[in-house]
Length: 366
Ligand SMILES: NC(=O)c1ccc[n+]([C@@H]2O[C@H](COP(=O)([O-])OP(=O)(O)OC[C@H]3O[C@@H](n4cnc5c(N)ncnc54)[C@H](O)[C@@H]3O)[C@@H](O)[C@H]2O)c1
Picture 1 (cartoon, helix red, strand yellow):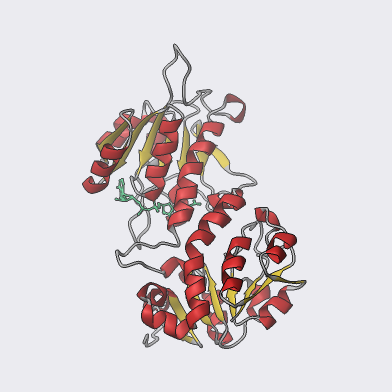
Picture 2 (picture 1 turned 120 degrees about the vertical axis):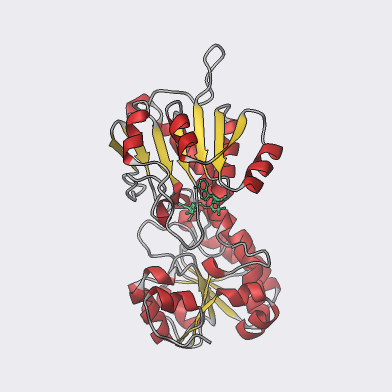
């Protein structure tokens, strides 16, 4: 199969859909891989690295789309790419169709086969192509939080690990899922005192079993949250209720109970945020202050660490890419139900009913 990897052209996107290691595996399987010139530059991979691994470098995005049977990328195609996508071409990437009617219509019109990373689902109902980005964001939340606790950038002036004779900082993590556990682990590693809350006792039992003693679990309730925020230096929001908006666990009035310079990082911002005062921010301007509380609410946190994010993402996408290339999309979907769950739009038809529902379209979904 001919597989194309275009350079991401969405604003500030530095990740790339395939590393040289992926090219190596695919060429070993007798496939041809076209990489757009400088596609990997933002993630630290150069044209020579790809060529050494067996790729053919093409100068323009038009050449990559035109030469390929399957396109592998990171972000959803943007307007400039719509007309480059051909009928029957497989496009394997994050799409998040429900958030864009324009994109959905464009992909229906393209008659391509759109397989979305975010709906590929394993046999336990987990979303394996979303997990690595939550891992990155969870770990990054502490790195960012520790930075914004510094006084020159309006934080409380607390060093999370403390020093001999000075107690460590206190971190409250809301949600003990992928984001929360990774955040708790990083904060504990810095020596902070960590409290992690969830409503799922199974998760809390797991955390209690695997984390060191300075990570304390507590059931998530308004009463407990109100009590803990008074003493916390850094608060991480990592809750998720699948398919729903995040619950507002920290309300505007609670900010007054926090000490000036407390930092709150809302990782759940992409689901509407779990703090009432959350507004999505960007890496150019990541924070704002309300009632002396520093808010960090960047919606694409992994974008700031493209090397780590690219490798983490492609580690999990590559086995699916290889299967799609070796078997063709129809056979791959018939033998692997995880990939079949990724099918969103096939040759002009929506095959994932939540997309039609998102726009109230009365489409018959097969
Ligand atoms: N900002 C970013 O760049 C970025 C990156 C990756 C993920 N995310 C987002 O982070 C959020 C968390 O993702 P995840 O992968 O950790 O999800 P997850 O499903 O693994 O974990 C969510 C946890 O929240 C818990 N929860 C639900 N209601 C709660 C409540 N009232 N109190 C406490 N805990 C509660 C759940 O029981 C679950 O354990 C999602 O919204 C995800 O989209 C954001």
